[in-house]
Image 1 (tube, rainbow, N blue to C red):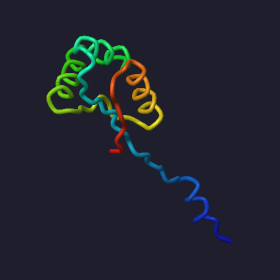
Image 2: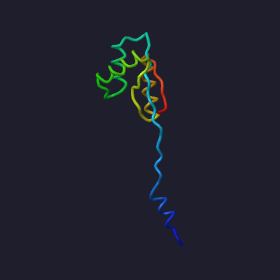
Image 3: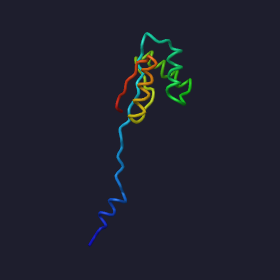
Image 4: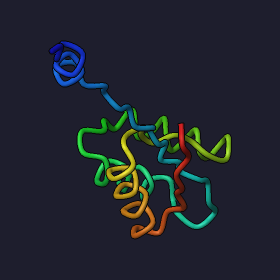
Length: 94
């Protein structure tokens, strides 16, 4: 009676990796840069003013910029929070 194969399978579970999602900020002609900057820092806790400025300016000059890359649930939260502030945002699977 050999149980080593079933025992080793339970001792070494396979770790499932989940995809990451990019929260994208889109440029718009409606919001002032200062408002976008403060909104980014309010929505994404721990985001420095310098990082928020870089994101805002990248979206302004390139049309869109990555705000944060994370799991789906927090990405949805960030995206909806930005939208609730009148900013244009979307998700992209990484």
